[in-house]
Image 1: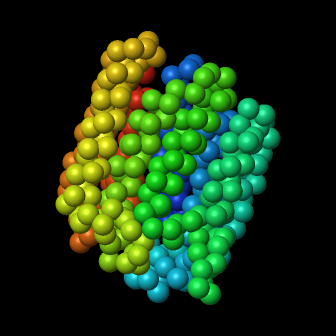
Image 2: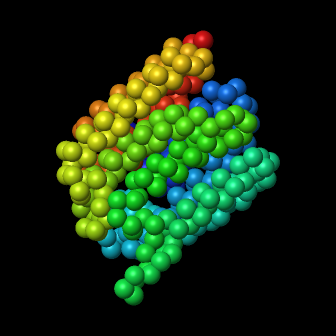
Image 3: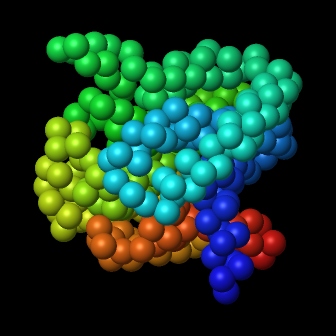
Length: 284
């Protein structure tokens, strides 16, 4: 068990775990349109590796000052190896992007600008520089919007279909909901003016906001299932099952829970969704 936990921690610290989640969600969207352009999920995978490692490495020193955690300490210890891993990821992302860039170029450009602005200072106020993530109440909406764009809009563009904004909204709500537990986890570390949902509404109300978002996502999924022919019953059940497990994890979220509850459990919902969706295809 100790070896499994150490392996899981390594996957989390290296961001392979979260990258597998974005690969999973992107792959799911491609399946809706019978698109076999797997270069896109691989591009998303390596881009996520680059972006998440870059964002954490550029602020690892300040993260340790904000508060101690096993994750922060591990990033600091392995920061030079992670820098090499980060630039290697960028290289692979570029190689896959070259193969598919035409329909998604401008969307990726906008995403790149947002990602850079999220982690690096872009504006100055009262002698201090700020990043997009420092704007009050913005962080969670930025994360959910970027994930929805990457895992829904990019696959639609590569599949050459019209953008289905209901699917985009459903994915946005899913990512929005499972991001709230991380704001609950970070409640003791976040600056008071950051304006996260737990800071504004308290932990209990923040949890119910996340649960409500998932319930709306389930309603959108039901409507989409009734009005289109892209879903099978097993695939819908796979998505609903993941949403319900996420509801339980959100409901039980608390700042005093183990770091692994969030980094492995909650973060794993995207990966679980892909696994269950894949199993639903086998059942066809």
